[in-house]
Amino acid sequence: MPQLRQDPLTNTWVIIATERGKRPSDFAEDKKEKAEHGNCPFCLGNEHMTPPEITAIREDGAESDGKGWEIRVIPNKFPALKNEGNVEKHKNGLYETMDGVGAHEVIIEAADHNQDIHLQTEEHILKVLKIWRERVKELGRDERLEYTQLFKNFGSVAGASLAHPHSQIISTPLVPENILVEMENMERFHRENKKCLLCEMVTTELEQQVRVVAENEDFLSFCPYASRFPFETWIIPRKHEKHFADVNDETLEGLSNVLKQTLNGLAQLLNEPPYNLMVHTAPYNIDGGGDYHWHIKILPRLTKVAGFEWGTGYYINPTPPEDAAEHFRGVDKVH
Image (cartoon, rainbow, N blue to C red):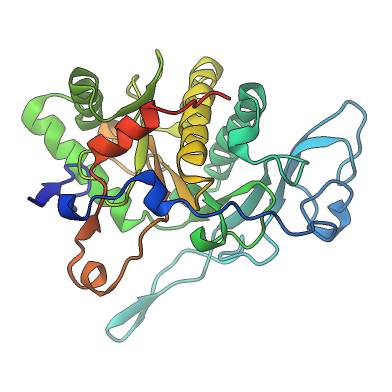
């Protein structure tokens, strides 16, 4: 019998279509070899093909915008928003408009074209996470910006235009509506229960265990109760903290471990499927953000969002999260 489930964080309703139940083998496709990458602008030796770097992790003595780097951060060559203009809104009859003020950066996560993040060591992933934190914190110094979305598109189906391992940051002068909804739901839950919604979610998932993917002292990775997509996974820090930018190095070490397990498990199960990874964090300059609890969402792109989903806002998931988590637990997520 299908079930309707609601996500208490987003209010989204999901149909868990058990009669359509699908296993990993129903989604996994043959692994595609990466195309020749001699002209990839993100590869070592092609630094001249990118805008000047913003920051980088380099060997001692290595010159900026040259070889000798592990991770580079560059402006996006084709930015969605630009760091110029003001944030005043203008009326246009019924409508409002404003300058496209913001920032758009690319984090090149490795010099090796084929070293996707799930193949990297925890030590290298930790360096990537520290760069993520550094850029989110630095962009928050611009008083025009209200929110920074850190995200990773893996695979062309998920929106990646280049196969070289990378993630992106877009900072906006507005707080996204979905973040405002999450904030509102967390604040309401705290008023009514004197507890944090995501802290309670972690407690519930650890008690029930049926949706747990991986865990350590600092983080829990699990398939959420109302998963919109097959094998959707959330990573939540056990310690309540509202801003990703405030996470300390020790906590990031724990995240590198759980993130490695989660993404490697996904790669093993589904033959390196396309996915979108998003870090949800509290806005920079908004009151009431104290109840927010930052987290990561990983959405494999295995099903198509079609007319029903666009028309209703409901999602149909053919793989119950309990089944997905069981499959995750059955694979080697470390190597």
